[in-house]
Image 1 (cartoon, helix red, strand yellow):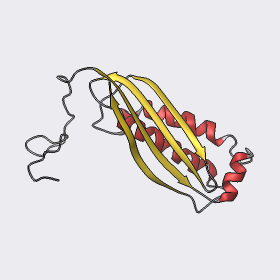
Image 2 (cartoon, rainbow, N blue to C red):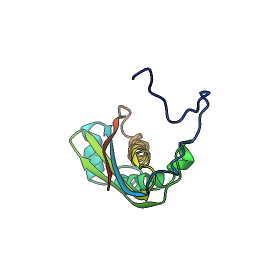
Image 3 (cartoon, rainbow, N blue to C red):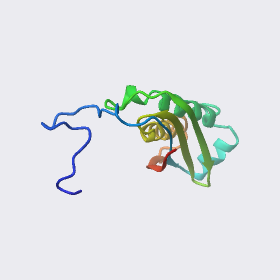
Image 4 (cartoon, rainbow, N blue to C red):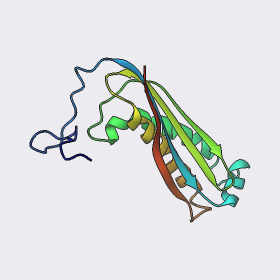
Length: 151
């Protein structure tokens, strides 16, 4: 980072603050984020057969991710509360992992990458919670923003 670069969430005295986005234009914005739940192949087989003790884990994780994206400003202190137009959580089930993707959309003065990251993270954590009884080796990794778009 350049020494003259400033952090937007700090004021001149170094105190944390919410960024003022009031002068920014209202634009349609979309962000996509991902996370990965790494687990045993036997866990994936049980998930595919809907044979895990807690039931349909993908549906529950999908709803949890959508709910989390909608509640991001309640969880991340300096995030602006946004009216989301759309949130979608999807999964790609592989041999020993589940790829989680969350897309969040709004029309606002600030981006939605935190909502997408929160949705992907909570969906992955929900998968972890619902599978932990059968797999003690799981881990969540690779939480990241894949794309940000302003239109």
